Length: 77
Image (cartoon, rainbow, N blue to C red; front, side):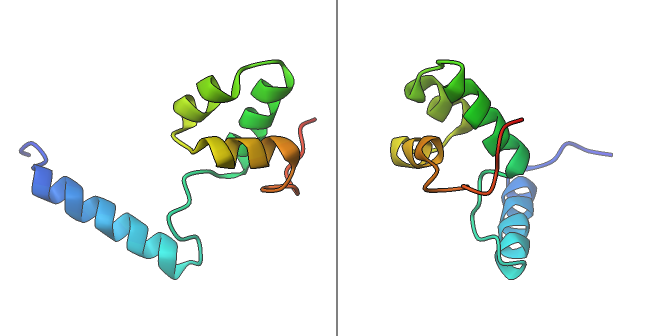
C-alpha cells in the first residue's frame, strides 16, 4: 500500500465537506463536545485568543459561544 498523495487527500476533504453539507452541517468545525470544552476553558479563565487558536475558530464565534449566542443548547456540567 503506497503513501496517500496530496490529490487523494484533497479529494477526501472535498468528499467530507460535501457529505457534511448534504447532511445539513455545512462547513461546521465544531461539534457538541468541542463546544463543551470551549465553554469549560473560557469559564476557567482561559483567554479567548488561546481558545480560538486551539479550535481554529474566529474571535467572533468564540465570543458568541461564551455569551451563549451560538450553541446555547450546549451546557457545561
